Image 1 (cartoon, rainbow, N blue to C red):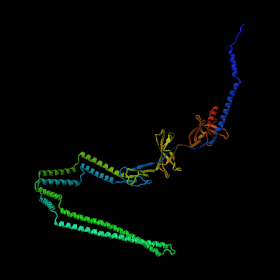
Image 2 (image 1 turned 90 degrees about the vertical axis):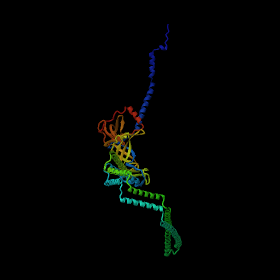
Image 3 (image 1 turned 45 degrees about the horizontal axis):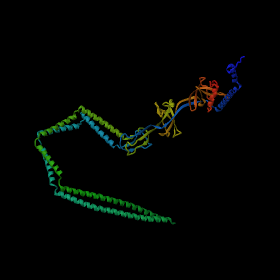
Length: 616
């Protein structure tokens, strides 16, 4: 018989697999699945409970009204007109006519420079202009006056006559006698100088010297006596004043003692005290007069002695001059006069030489040329030069007058003096006088890229001021910069806002804030901006139609939004406005559990559109 053994590898495969399948679907395996389902349910319940507790709601009302979009900026108040005035010419300030805060009118003088040098420059330029005009007239052949022509003709006639006399060599008897008389006078003068002073001249000079000495001695004695008397009078007046003061002091203190007694001070005692006081005052006046007289006596002594000494010195010099006789220079001059007179006489008595004829002819030719120059125009070059000189002289005069005008600093417009940096005696270049026109002011504010879009020239601006908190002034946009300003990678656009301060106490340099209304609507349907919810591409509001009922979600199209209010243009589902003034909105306040709300919505399938249709 045979024996068959079965190995594990030879066991039926299907049976083994069947056994394994039975163990995989054991009931114990359902326990983990149940636990997972239980935990998931608890989580969903917890999330629903948390969301409900963290999303409180409030109500709001649909309103109808106006809405404005505005941008704000701040800047420093500046004057529309401001000028720092300084002198355009050099010099010294002689007068400053204004102070800080003074109101000035256009053209009103503010300060002056010393004009003495500038005035002389104008006078010199005027003289140069007249000279240039005369030279041009001469070059044109029409500058000579009738007097000039008459003088030139007379000079020509005289030169002609002189030439004829020289050529003919004849002299009249009168000419000869006159020449001889001049020669005799010159010779007598020379002889007198050589002879020296006469006895009478010396005696008179000595007498004058003696009188001057006596006068000096007399002045010295008389003036010394007068000075001594004046000084004695001062001493006497001083003693009288001292006596009067002592008497007054005695009476004064006696009266003070009597005032304390029961009987009191009598009228007689009062009169005596007043008389003593007047005596002191009179003595003081007498002393002052005596002192003044003494000073005058001293001055008279000095002046009188000086004058007497000058007289004595003059007399001594006159006598010494006579004793010395004529000087070498005086003798030489007298001898030259004799020689000249002799030559003139010899010329009349002797015929002319060829040199004399040539000289006379030259004088005649020169006189003829001078007359022709007065009556004939110059060359083209002379005329052009004269015209250029005239133009230059005109420019110099205009510049000199302009410099003289600039020596007065004047206000460029009506305004107020803001600062004065000059004083009398200063150099013109030291400082300036600033004038501002505070009737029109401006601020320059900088707006960002996001704010500048709707800002245009001419828009109204409401201005407030930190220093004047209760004041609001309306301004107008004057300019909007077309090009941005970039500073530290920040892009801004300067906007200038002008305004009139009127009676408001606005000062240059104050800080101001400006509010610019870029968009404005009236009669719009408005809801609080927090009531508008964004769901993807849609914007929703929750509207409660009937109190106590759930709100209805309505998709809306929004417009402007500002100051917590949003404009509702229309309802998306109807294409027209479905909200009315007074409708009640439900506003959900978003808290930190918003992430839980999103998870709950995700579990529920999310928003698929409004929960209710539009309502009437």
